[in-house]
Length: 335
Image (cartoon, rainbow, N blue to C red; front, side):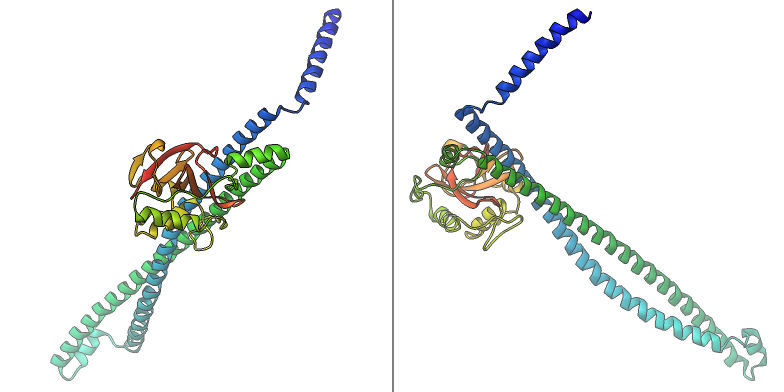
């Protein structure tokens, strides 16, 4: 058996050496460029998904903070009520302490005027009933206060969890953006120029070869949105940003449409369900264009085959070709 193993081992060794030698060779120019574009698109998609989830968590966080403010107001009002009842209980307790040595029966039979004593006895019974009601109200108010304080703590805990989740999502997206930069950095100068000229999903801004979008032909509102978007090219990207000096993708489109009186949610997924669907071939300036599954990213079509979007924290708001490497998933018309 030993005689049969040696040739086999030798053959495996030769094949392994050959494989390693082949893997060690640099990829062809076209292959490296295609791989880089695919990887950039993948990383941008993951970053966009994290950004979309960030905004969803922000919506939950906003609701929790509103609830917390209401609970804090309720607690303040309840504390006043408890304090008022506590003072009533103190007065009643003092009265009971002062009257503790005289029994109702003794007071009745030793009184010079039994009618007057009987009236006092009835009044005493009524006072006792009122005292019981005060004590019960006090206990119930205290229980309500404790319940509100427990609710407050639960809301605070939920807010802290949401804030941590947002930080984790931001870190995840930032890591993807940094990885995308590393992909570009590993390319040759010629390959980087090819990436920039194709506006791959890295978010390379429009080069000098691109001209401004043509005049809008479909209305003043569309022109206003295009002008607003173009005026903000170059501004930085910030997670959860909605202007005026920084944006994320859905915050950018939300504020653009707010200029013409259209209210949108701060979410690419929510914006995908407004207006009417539009085919890519039928796009008009001012249409919302969506990318990645979910969708995870949104921008504004400005005409001439171009869009403006808040891409990522590496490149900010950019003016790029629709054929930018990001997978198109649909468009919506609101105007």
